[in-house]
Image 1 (cartoon, rainbow, N blue to C red):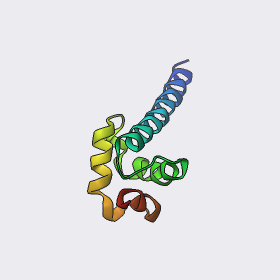
Image 2: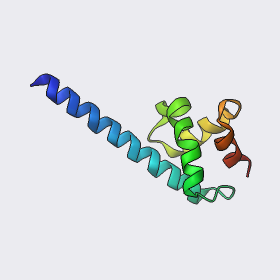
Image 3: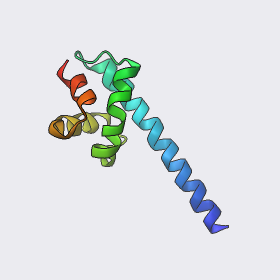
Amino acid sequence: MKARFLRFASLKSRARRASTVGLFLSLFAAGSAHAQGTPEQRKACTPDVYRLCAGEIPNARAITACLRRQKASLSDACRAVFEQ
């Protein structure tokens, strides 16, 4: 029973994290004068958020700041979003 609960809690946590990243990316796109928030731009930065800034989820401002600090480590596609 405990294992089932832990497995459910883990799935719930991952779902919450994924929806938070989606919310962040839509807020980032809407709030940034440089990014238009196209699906392609969100797709470009989502892996970098998980790879470099997962500890900042769900704070959208902290994620944006983290990605800016990690600019040298961003994928080419995500770096292009920040340079627009």
